[in-house]
Length: 196
Image 1: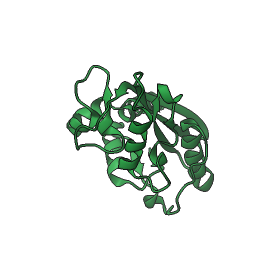
Image 2: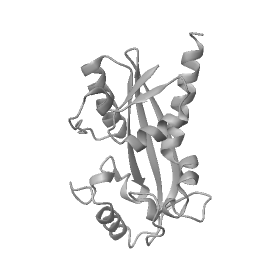
Image 3: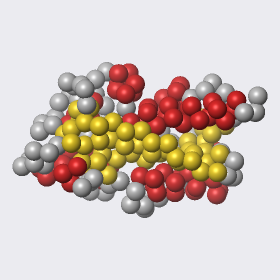
Image 4: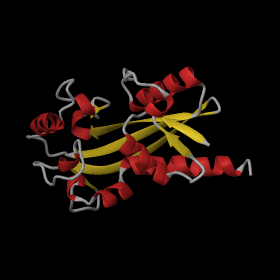
């Protein structure tokens, strides 16, 4: 089975390929000749993931999936959420995003937060959603230089390390994205078993 993934990030596609059943082949947008930026204009992660997968399905009528991820901070009523990548501006500068978040939380004791990934899968015309969540809290300063985005200020529950202090393999085992992909992989296994 071929699944088109709404990304041109080959590293991300390879990472997901390793987590899916061997019978599933992941293709990037480049592999199928889509080179335009797919708009993300919804105000929920579910909406953005759905828009991206529907864009591909409407263009190519092929099985596909898309994801969207956000950091949700309780004291900010779920912000930055769907705007996580461009929280400090449209240039998507991770340092500026972290600096803005730390500034907004400087007098805040409630630092609970979560990373949430939502995957929209369109299989034979039917759309399904899979969600992965990691609870944690926002530190008062950056720690570590691995990872990307908000990783240096996010410490997952049960850990004494931020995502940016963990080896990538450790982070990938417990991350929100990997939790969502595991649910997707389980579903695809069951789906394929029905036809064997």
